[in-house]
Image 1 (cartoon, rainbow, N blue to C red):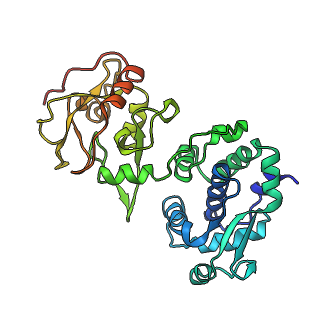
Image 2 (cartoon, one colour):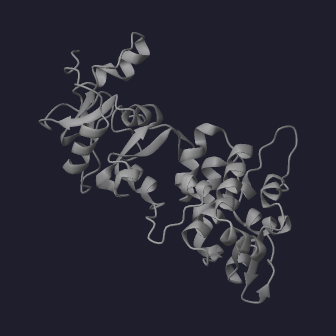
Length: 314
């Protein structure tokens, strides 16, 4: 059976360009869970909030429920549902799925194929991403569902593989009260933060842990510049004024570094990047530990480019 083709042909309600990513999101989530534990079963009551969060952030603006794809993905031959009563889904009702102990997992034939050919998982995940979401969201989506895409595409399955903590993003964003630690940006669509990301200070690929002492809440622009080495973290007095317009106290001992190698003459480049030089970092809420010195030192030595600019004058 051509599982990649079947993945590309998921039955979705479409009309005049209307998006319906409900099944792709559940399927991507299920593939990630298979990658982590091939024998795992997804009980609806346990994964409902995860799925609801994915639909809220990456689905269309209209309200929906994760019960819909949990039931209907069965019709595509890639998913099965069982309840306390036996095989078969009780329907699309949330109460029914909860009350009957409904649990889903990838179809038996697909599980066999994925065990036989590990790289198949990566090809299927790539199709789901390419056909349903723009490239700018692929990395973020993989992080949100806990999928290691590069590993999946190459079929590498080491016995003692590190697993990402899918909760890191929410933990870090909560710790920094949903605002960029560099500029204070805090945009939302309704209750969903938009353009805010959890940045690893020491990269995960280089043994950086998935915890708040290795994380920063950054807007998309400053996350990219941080990972490119344009921005960094340096020591500071910790007694500077709050960043303008944020009302937040600076993080003890941390200030923002801006590389002298960065060049930008536009007003946006000056205001969004260059004027950050020397500014105190907006720290996490009281009771949360800031970035650990060892992680900050790793980023400075391994990622940050050249020498920092002197503190911006106002």
